Amino acid sequence: MVQNIVILTGAGVSAESGLGTFRDEGGLWSQYDLKEVATPKGFALDPAKVHAFYNARRLNCLMAAPNPAHFALTTLQRQFPGTVTLVTQNIDDLHERAGSTGVIHMHGTITGALCAACGHRWDAPRAMAATDACPSCGKTATRPDIVWFGEIPYHMPEIDAALMQADLFVAIGTSGSVYPAAGFVAEARACGVRTLELNLEPSETARTFDEGRYGPASKIVPDWVAEMLAGVSRPT
Ligand code: OAD
Image (cartoon, rainbow, N blue to C red; front, side, top):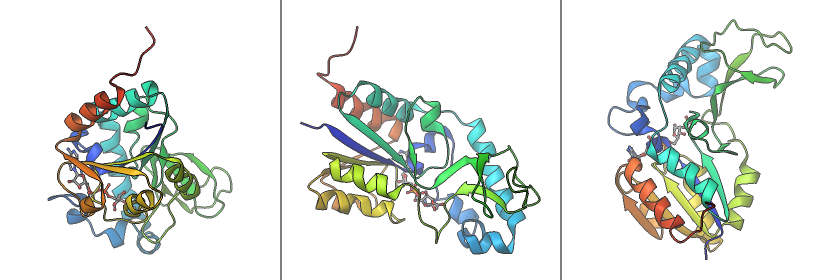
């Protein structure tokens, strides 16, 4: 019987909310050079360009709303009798706005600001600028609280521990192209955990999963959640 579920979400879970994915046709990495906007070197070379990129992401996120996939995962968290650990590579806050709690943002959040000088964190304003001063130390080294390529994702020990305790690992709407998240399926399998991919189409790592179900997240995630909750008695 499944008691501990670890779920990893990627851009595909938010695609139907109107937030673009990265690697699908017309995705963000076909419009922008990731080395310029998503690396520490790119930020050092042109902080204004990087802030403009993330200011646009923040605005898109503010205008978007959670879709049935986000809400279904909240229902699972609330009604599943075991634990549901929700890990996301997404920087949007749509899981939280759908009511999910304890979401582990391994690539940071668009709603957060970080001082590269002193490590202080605060809520990002709608538009960040290279001239913004840190409210704690006053230095102008403020950046979005996002993990860039070449940096270490957040909360890795917590995620590894959850994977080791899991009976089921589910990856939703992720292409499996970016490590360490792309390696979670192998890590889970090495611990004897059953693995399931829910995606629009088979991802690059599809063959490493025990099972795959394919279609839009707004359909296949609620269907899977209904299956997981079938037979679970709910408070009346
Ligand atoms: P990708 O853009 O690489 O992959 C999105 C996946 O979602 C693809 O496999 C699509 O087939 C799938 N997809 C698209 N629409 C979908 C839908 N309606 N329902 C279900 N699936 C759908 O995005 P990620 O895998 O999240 O990191 O990318 C991983 C990381 O790469 C991101 O967190 C970001 C990016 O560079 C950083 O910026 C550090």
